[in-house]
Image (cartoon, rainbow over all chains, first blue to last red; front, side, top):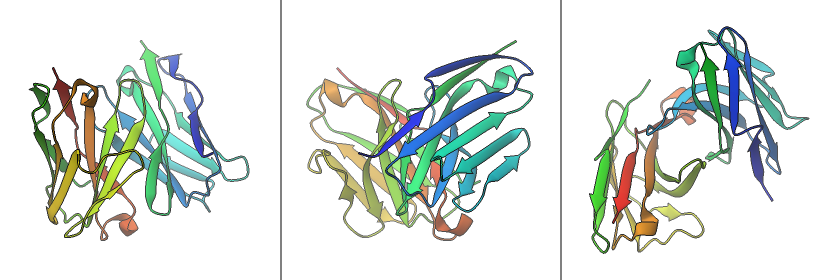
Length: 110
Length: 118
């Protein structure tokens, strides 16, 4: 069956460190993968999109990698700040349909 | 980026009543709109996909007679939860996609509507 798994439900890191979140999938052939940020009681906010033929994408302090052989995407936040604390969702797009992982709740401690 | 609004943001109703949630794309025309439901600490689950002017396509397990979706214009979709029950209490989120933005692949999400059925 198809699955999207994000490595941990919760991740705590110290301010200034790099946060690394993992998204693994099985039985999908996604055309591309997206990462979203969701704050409590709010809808997801789009952060980055990476296509199947791209290895890496960067946007300011964010970096995403996409390994279609390992069926894995890594999401990095460098120089993390308390304001980065939120739930981060990966989502696969296959046949123009978006399917979400359950998310990782990141807490950046001051 | 494009903006999607939802109204109301929060609604509390009695069991057995119907609730309508509106989703609007404010600065673009949404050829396709999606409705998701999210329970606490869980992922967003797609309920249905609607294209303007045609009937919605519902995901398996979602009752189309209970969750009525209308996508009457390119900027407005509504979700009506009919005869709501406490188990329908959830966070409902809409999103919209335009064929003209980001190659037609990016979805923009609304802020969500918290429904509580007493």
